[in-house]
Image (tube, rainbow, N blue to C red; front, side, top):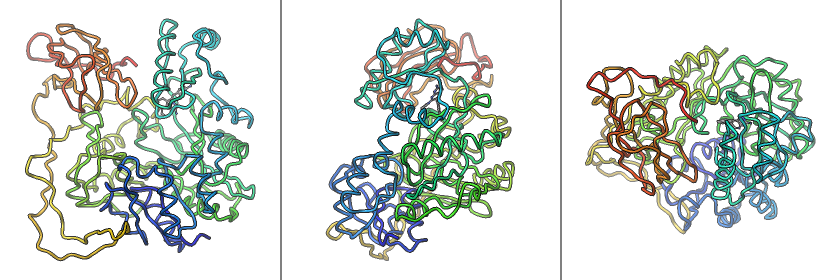
Length: 596
Ligand code: MV4
């Protein structure tokens, strides 16, 4: 086994890997950016090294710097966590070339699964069902039209190198085809520097079900069942669970078999995940994630297998000690991702200082968190700060425990997605296990989720008395300080916004607000126009994706506050939509099918 592992990541996953190393009596080296100087997880590492002088956003991507720290600190292996360098084949190769253990799959397997068309080809070779679609890239509208003729609308155009929904365009009618193809290519080039796109039949209400695989370097490959990750919004997963509610055991076995065959086909080793779409009893391979995933704990809870232990053991050459027949899945686990985001403002990220932190615990509750009271969440990274995972003998018990844990969890200073989760675990669709990938965005009414009050000026963060972190020659040390404290920390006010709620029961505020920071591409309506809820008002480009911003209510556009080219921040008013006539605003249908 390795003697000293460098953890090339941050947040809850850095902590997760540090804990696994401690369990296995492996010494640890953490790395951190300037923005993470006083991050809480660093205290668990034996050593912590600054990844300067790169900007915080790039620090954890600096291959040469990470390798230098590994050499200086005497690490003999690197665990990349998820995100950052975890699926970078060049990094995997460089780690191995430096004579270090790489806690991940071979770089060849990362490359094989690195783009959707290559992944489809390998899945096809493994005899794994694929969504009907082309196997080659195309830039020809005629090819897309011919495909749609054969399979019918809707179809979806996908960027081969895409991810996170970028370069993904659904086409519902022949007239939209050429424009969608061009838009997908533009987005693909802007986001990934590669414009290859291809076309698939579009499944309109699929569930996202993925299979966890573990493969050793001696030919042992098993799967540990599935996770259902359908509860998502804008390609961000919110809730994941294992097993998938109501999945037929024969379908589970067939999906597991398919995932194992695909893994063998690409010479996979370590922990990996095959993603499938599932609709009407059928399943279709989408892609393989060649890393540990955020939602791995639900599989750990139902399988009793510590995935990070096995990543480390497999990387060190150990054999899996069990066969597929010996895998026993038992009970049910559900994970809720806690993000520092304002659910009442389109889930906009809300970095800031955590003034109060009281995580839940008790039987059946696990919390994996990279946050602590008094810590300021930096704005440079992903907004996920914790995961709450509940385990029960069956789904209802797990759901009850998750609901209890979410009630217990107190976080003040920043708004979080806990508000959403409290609504979600009680939603009839979730209770019934009927959630698809479109439920949250298109079917659920989130209008009751409160927007956070802006922080009061002057109620700024207060430092608790604590140890001081210093750097000596780029190495982190802790010095205990005992000094009189400043004023006590004040809990941030988290009241529901009262004003402006219409008596009619529909969305009350007149202002249509920007769900995220971005640039206005175009406006679709003029002042004075009548609009129906769900109708396109404008297009906002953010992070290289074009987002259709639709009317949040019926009414008249009494003011348009932006024009094409304007840059807006999350929460900015884009348009004012007032109800027609006086006063008694109509009760209106948020549930009506919105245009997307
Ligand atoms: C699809 C699909 C429906 N039909 N492909 C979105 C991102 C990318 N990983 C694959 N995605 C989808 N591909 C076909 N042929 C629906 C989605 C999709 C989705 C998939 C998994 C999880 C969440 C999703 C949200 C929206 C769309």
